[in-house]
Image (tube, rainbow, N blue to C red; front, top):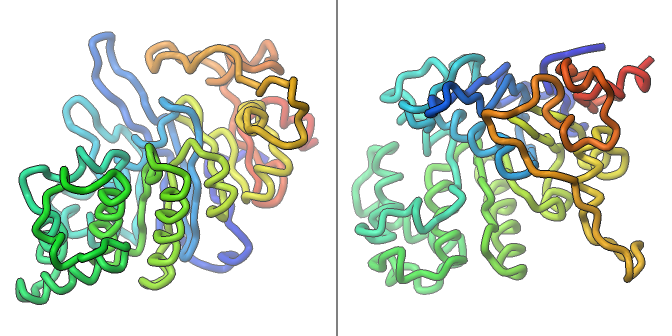
Length: 342
């Protein structure tokens, strides 16, 4: 049975209404060579108290999808060219930038990939956290100050009251990432989008940041998280469901158990095959997916992965496969699935 919507859900959310429904989202950019489609018809649901992982190589459309949800696509040269982003009954894709300010940071917040560029270098840390609170809540500055101190303490910043006066360059990478989490959670949003929140951090700090995000999520209205990452080990440790993206499209969706124990798409198998494991012999080389991700302007007309797939069929080069139901809660975009589902 074919479908265009990746709407599988984990068992604990079986009867819940989605917090966020993305439907056939398309994002395009005007470039020198013409129009480049960075996201080509992405659909998925996000459920209450869920951690949804989005994985894929650089250039797969993960970050652009998240920026579209926040309505932060720079226009020009980019634009949301089609589809819906439904938060409750409100379509973010059609919401004005002015109205979106009431949602952004308050209802839906984002931890950006690089905190040094996301934080304003000319304002103190305290001022930036306070600004988030004061923008969305009509409270005195003194109360906003105390809220900011409390958030910095909650994310593990030592001497938070003193460090409110410091600037971003006076913080380490891990501490700046903690500040970004404090900023994102200051107004207790229902949805937190974390774009590579552990990039460039050491392993110990990565674990602390992830534990902190999950702990604060559970404390504040049982919010949901969209976790964008390259690190499959992080996904296995923290996520309930996984979306695998490539070429601006969803290639496979399933629970963590399905994706890691029974992957169906050749791309997913390749990603998992590249992980080191104790089962491999010392002399074995790690598997690598052949070739490189094609330029956004040179994507194949058929399956986006056909130029690198070891199981490619003739029709893959000319015909785009649909996202089909392989098993309960498990969807795959691959012509090979037609035989498996018959």
